[in-house]
Length: 425
Image (cartoon, rainbow, N blue to C red):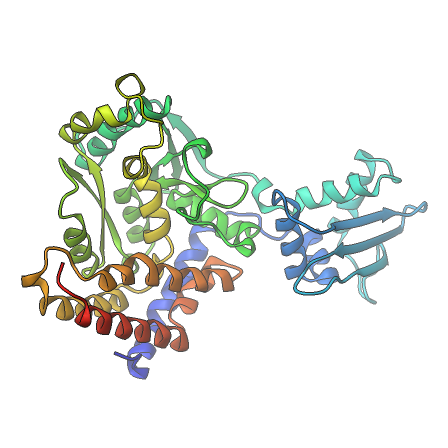
């Protein structure tokens, strides 16, 4: 299967509709005050984005700073950007300007007021303090949240099968870790989104969870869009908060994004046997099953993870991973592809089902290459697109770029050949 030009052209109206929907969900964010636009003109938006990310990244090497030197005269200002380690060689750039001129043009009044407000908060001789204050104002995470967000004592609707399944898992999680995840509710427009927020102390940092790329972490509309879907992240951009699947789907459908991505579904199971077959079969229909244990499952395995019942260390391998599968599956498998048209995913799934049908009758487990396509290849494909954009609104087009889709389909063909040659298991 290779991308057909007519098929890709037919996607254009869908992609345009997606861009409009994304911008609508993020439109309440105060992205670019006038003084910020002046700084971006002076130094370049990409340099400022990179600098913001490096300054808040723990353990980052090299020297990096934004020097803001305020002159003795009220109208005199000198700004110097000195980040090292950007790309392969250091660079430095100095911009000297007055508060009323910029490269022959007039600076915005807001820019002058911003520098003046900083001048009054720190002494003029403390260039580092001025720089930190300015960078803190630039950081999109510090912008006010326009929505109502509150913490809930419990999930609001235990009659709902999805929430009931999560409510069974939460106390078992607390028995293992000593505390349960937080339940958060966000209200905006006509939507209410309930999310589960996991602690950094309980989730590994080994790449098992999705990390937002640096460019998106300082783009206010993108961050508000993602928050309104129910996602949240720590200071390193690692996704630690995820929405209930039905709430995520409700926002996407209500925002005209229902024809994109995989549909996550929570499944409550007494056993994880035959997991691979169920997972692959659902994935080929653009459905992402998230397997949580039933009450019987936790009764059977309590001796493995409840401290007073076991002498084993608290890290219990696959069972510990099971407790955080909600954050993993929604962050790693649902979020990255949620703006890839479902028609693309369904065509990929059709090809995989056709291949699997040839060996399904003689194998208990699906061929590993077919599982790897969904577990690894599709995620890496989407993550590469995320790393190249500066706004979520650019993602639909980036995910459907013809050359990128050609690489994905070539990878699928390779996996299909591997699966055909794989021994039955």
